[in-house]
Length: 614
Ligand code: F6R
Image (cartoon, rainbow, N blue to C red; front, side):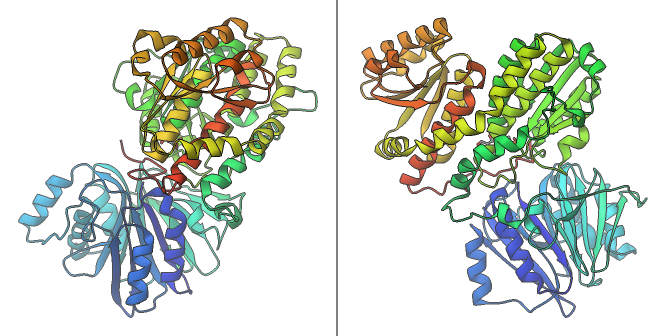
């Protein structure tokens, strides 16, 4: 949450910073602001609302040109989303400017102390306290980096901070605890950002910053220390995608592009993980086969869409790997007393690798000595660093706030892990694992086929744009798919949408059914005859009570047709893999319906892509 960009080099800083903010706007769009250092003076501009408002303000009143600057796009936590609370924040002298991502938990005490000390604070934010603390520390001596280290020692909570000071016109200082910050290493210029997307047009060489580190960014070099000023070890890496991946490529919305990219994303996530002998090889997981044999329980922690991937993982892990598996919302996990041991494998699923709830769950599990495996899409993010091993999904950058391609690749990752554990523990015969891998390898083509047949789904979505409520039903892995379909509709169309396990309907939710209520039902393959027949009965039950039934079933499933007001056919695949094809129509449905309502599907209200606060 909140996007941060810092720059020092030879180009006009304002252009670099605003361009970077445009690529980070998915992280928050309550306000945007910039600071540029020019001729020894700080010039700032900030506006509530999306970046476009700031751009207009900058066009009306351009700040003086400088080659050092920073910018911020905000997801409001402390203080209303107005001009006054927009970042950057300044100290009393106007010589120090600060931007921030995260929450400084002890801000109230710090603000009172500062006000008692004579500082005048101009906003309601936690961030502004840092500008004034830096002002005091600079008076005590040392440069901005030294002041930042001392200030960080006083802060509680999560923060990425970037600061500049007129006293050192070649220096941008960043600090990081619990919120993301990466360095882009250029030639005669360097960048700081919450996400490499901000500087990918200029460099693909990056440095991953660790926890509790301060970085000094100058035109000709980058220095990283810990909060005590000791040199810190950093990890350099090369970003394996380029600027075109972070652009819309002719689509109206990133979400449309990302939905369309799913066949490739699924294929890329399988790539290099299946040996010539058909056996899976997941060496990058950094958890040995012996360790996997010792595992007696798996707990999956995740949030939102990633949690839904976890729910589907449970079915695959229990079926293929024969291990008990629990799935837990990361935000709940650490506030109860989960029973973990050295033989528990905790799998944390997170697209961004920065979700605070997921990180906190991982740390909680670490304290209980569990083994930790991450499933993550963002190289250089925090989660992989805090786990024993990681399996990267190769979805490429996901910029639309609503997760689509990351979800499908998370499913591929959990299938790979479940099959790998089955292979290692011998719970499935080698040829059974091999047969399933071959089916997995055919999934990109199946997803592609779904995408080719989406026009009726789009039409349906447009016809339902004025509905107040839509229900989603599923059984087995179709249940998490129903939850995911409902989540997509809620976040994009701002409509009441709920997913239920179809078998639970009669225990209460069936009372919601009324004449004309659209209910989307995900039907399992016919091969699962008991499950299949039960859901066909559920469809009849709701239809008898007036529901408008929209049924997603495999091609050739004639048995559901008489009870479906609308039938959406998807390719026939095995039950456990079915979410890869049944989720896609629900993504398209939500995206189209929200667009029909005139919503910006890339930036739904109140949301941000990367939830770095608890
Ligand atoms: C929904 C969505 C969110 C995220 C959730 C977790 O479309 O994108 O629910 O899935 O915030 O984010 P990650 O996976 O980055 O931990």
